[in-house]
Image 1 (cartoon, rainbow, N blue to C red):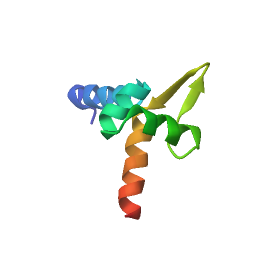
Image 2: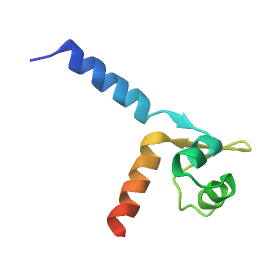
Image 3: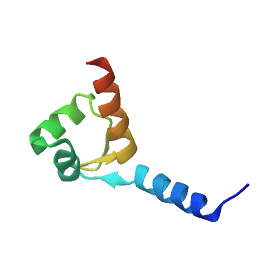
Length: 73
């Protein structure tokens, strides 16, 4: 059975997961300096895309990355 409320919540979650973040937003989320985010992105440890001179990150990729690191610890 389709529930309009459930569909709305799922749509909102998908939109948030696909949200594109900047270096500053990722640094704030991870509570690390921006230089750490740049370094992790540059060496390929943090999932990121470079568009021109700018690094961009998908919120869901950052969440997944954090989850995988917490599982490994």
